[in-house]
Image (cartoon, rainbow, N blue to C red; front, side, top):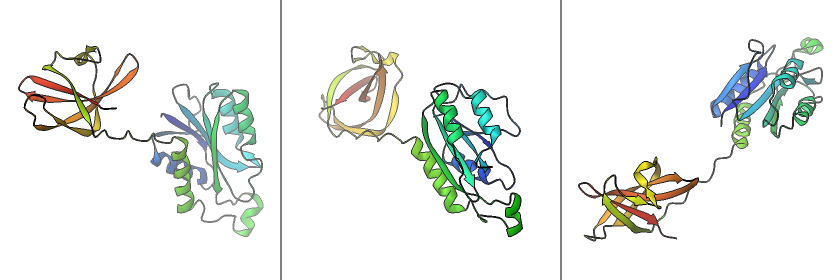
Length: 232
């Protein structure tokens, strides 16, 4: 999943710390809107927008960038930090997303040290934030946006399907050597049908006409390979 987070972080770098923590949890391109503005987002699968809360809203630079550059239909998520009140939060950005028919995957917020205006006279608000716990929660939020599929359960029973000279066997109705095999993280314990001895073969998967197939394959003897399919 190719993701970009477009952010603006002023004063104490609160938002920058949060998005940098998210970037450590996955493959993320961080786009600092103070230094980068002519960015194309078409090539990303998902886009995040992040800033602090300024005058009860997310920074206008972030909102305007989303309004101008966010592609229609692109999945989005929002991140913001705040000192005292959340204000309107992501309401304005959500309106932009709705106008562009972009699905909103979620939003994350946490407190951030704030010395803006009169807060400076009292030493600021939310001093020490975002802290380690805030950043850990930020990473958890980002990971929750893209849940990993459950791994395939390993097959314990394999049946012999075919064998022949290496490079010339047909499987699933095709010349299996004309397709790209992908090694799975498992092995298959099989019985050689000719000598009735136990062998351990690697398991592969291959896509044929849009359908994914699993099989085990290995050499019976020099130049002769055997193929096994999982039993239903």
